[in-house]
Structure formats: structure tokens, C-alpha cells
Length: 403
Image 1 (cartoon, rainbow, N blue to C red):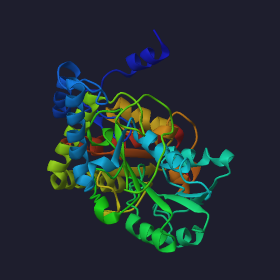
Image 2: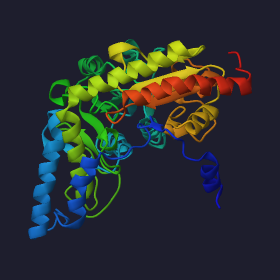
Image 3: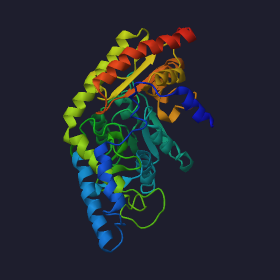
Image 4: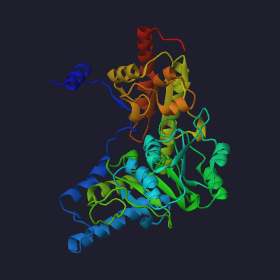
């Protein structure tokens, strides 16, 4: 028996389970799965780049599904590139841009961006690109005054996420975009909207960003498919080579089942957009403020009210350690994460929590929980009943280290 199998056997299956780690991994909605199955077995399974009946039929299907996906963004479906993940979309936005635009050598990102943005930008150091890091306030909001100061004639790209994936900060993207374009219209503006898609209104016909990343798996769609919105006139080049395909920027054989699932997930999320949003906000506030008021020595990470993502709960439990938090919670059937998935198996504090001023020991003692339409009030009640016991047990073992 492997170490992992032994660990699972010792853990067992709790009598009640509540999954709150949707940001790091997700099931697909049953209706999404049902929409995908025919495309594995009988419908439009061909290559849309090939000129025969099955190819033409698949191309027609592909264009129809792209229209469906682009609809809530209020953009032309031809302006969307279908990719394999939001990580690929972020890399394509940054590296694909630098392949087409020569001369300017400066990229501005915030210190709380997803690591796929930060690492993609920093990977260009060997090509003499400079990466300027924009600081944030103690609730994770970007500093617009410093953004204005950092923009200069050498700036090629500004990349700022719409919602922070870890502490739920809704960023002032409209204001940031205005600052950038007022300073220099030639600067390209990218937003990683992965954690905003399906949660807040993203009308890119009004906001007019140049590039925007969004994904399927954050709205109970399948993994392995995402999108990049590219405003008309913006030029990118693929970051890898491949065969002839419909998606020039992501050369590969197009995946009909995943596209069908993505389109269905979009349909379900946006058909009941306000209802889902209100449901998650209600559960978010019940959980966030319930934990904060019922457990001593806790700090909420991120902003309050309308400036916080509808689905985000992030709390530091002082005197606790991250791995103990996730393991002890898991033993009680509550599944959440400590910090971000990018650092979950590394003993280092989240770069986002340290950016907002958390000490390493405070960052390690944080718990990230996300909520979606599958969660119920009964589940949240269970978490509120159970977590004080979990925190009490951890502190009794560690001595509740004073910070």
C-alpha cells in the first residue's frame, strides 16, 4: 500500500462532508456532463479544420458554441480564442503579446496576481523585459496612484486581475484602465478575469479591456478548456507550435466535448446569474462573519461588502498552522485550502497574504473557502458548528501560539 493510500485509509470517510475548495478543483454540473456525452459518442466529433461533412458539421457546432460562450461578455465570438486552461490564456496574453510588439520592454503587474501572470512576466527577464510590481493596500486593492507613476514610454502591458482568487478583492479595473489609456493609448491592458467570470458583470463592450482571461472549471464546467478575449486590432502569436487548426493561437485538435460542456456551464451560470449571486453572497456572509464572531483571535483577509467576491471566504485563525487547519478540517469532513493551490504543498506563506501585510505565521494560519450554487445553508451551519471545535483542538495542541 502506498503512503497516500495508507493516509486515506487512516483518514476514513466522515459522516458529513462539505466541499468548499471550488477554487482549486471542481466537479462538473450534471447537466454539463449530459451535454458533453453525445460529443464523445456520436455528434460533431470531427476536426473542424478538415473539409468533409463531419468536419463542416463540427465547424458549425464550434462556431455556435463560441457564440454561446461569448454572449455574457458582450463581445464578438471571433474575438475569443479557446485555450486549454486559464494558465495558458494568461501566458498567451503576456508572452504572445511580446512576440508581436517589439520595442517597449516594460510590463506592470500587481503583487497579488495569480502566479501564472507573475511567472509569465518574469520569465521574460532574459529577453531584457522589466517587470514593475504594483503594491496593494491591506485589503488587496491595487494602488492607482502608484500605477499612474509607474507608466512610462517603455510600458508595453499592464496586467491586473478583476477579482483576486485568494482573498476575493474586486479590483477597480475600470478606473485602472482609464488611467492607463489616458496616459498612453498604445499600452495593452490585460485582466485575468478567471475568478470574476460568472460572479460579477463583465461587459467588455463597455469596459473595453484589450485582453481578458476566463475559464470553464470555475463555473462547474469541465477542466481543460478556457478562453482569452482579444480586442479587435490586438495582435498575438501562439506561444507553441502545432498542427493546422481553427484556433490559430492554440494549435491542436479542437475538443468538441469540452467545448459543449463549457457552453452549457455558461448557459446554466448566466441563466440564473442574479439568483446564484444572491445565494452565494448570503452563504458567504453567514460563513465569513459567523466564523469571525464565534471564534476568538481571527482576522478576515480581504475587503468587506460589495468589494468582496460573492463566493470568497478567507480567514486567519491566529495560533494555528495551515497544514493542521486543512487536515483537522478534513477529518471533520470540511474541505478547504490554506493559501493558494500554487503553494499548498510548499512550506512558505502565500504571496498574496504577505502582500497585504500578514506575518508569515498569520498567513500560514489562514483558511480559504469558496462557495458556489451547489452549497446549501445546512452545509454552512455544519461548518459553523464544527470549526470552533477544530480550532480549539489545534490550539490545545500547539498552545495557541501568541502573535
